[in-house]
Image (tube, rainbow, N blue to C red; front, side):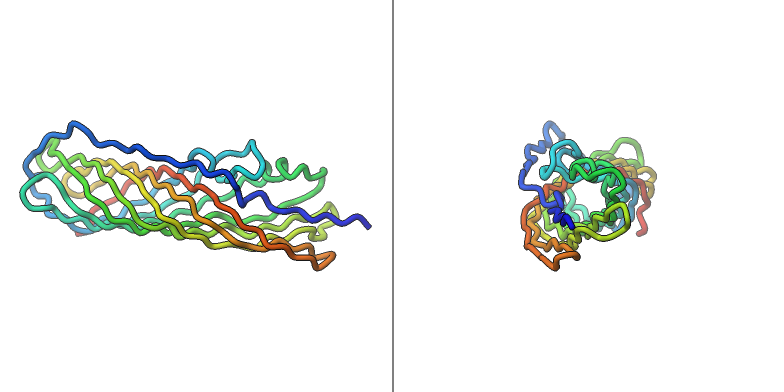
Length: 236
């Protein structure tokens, strides 16, 4: 009987680094009227970018699809100017494109793949600058850094008769993360924001063949870059 052991391509070896977020030509202004800082909660979509979203080059891609995101932020004005400091916690979840993943494996017709979703938890701190647009409305931009704790999903490849041919374990990784964001706060309560986050965690996992009992260890990196498009409210 022919045996097939497939190493999942979700441990890419190509790293794509993003840098160069620039905040320029922002004039100093008095603190926004009524703005005293506090806690906000936002949610929306998580859009994968660059290699995280690519599905064309095997073993260099993340196969991630648009998912969802949740963020909580605490911010506090800094004395004597338009600047503020903040801490934020971000959660994202992105499923994988099963059809593209099967194509990259060159699997014959009838083969099936079962795979979960990427998930990431990203605590960050940073500094922002704000500008009063209208009374009780403010625009802001932020620069931030922190850590990404990321989980890559388990993957199972099955043949036409349903027998499992390859099992790839879930894997956890972490890495330094950086990002930038911009937003609009209306009536000191309602928030519309864009947040960019990027990191390149390293992962170690296993791939096994249930038919032979053979198990191999795999390791690699995956650049996870996302744009979070969110709306929310300031809680207090």
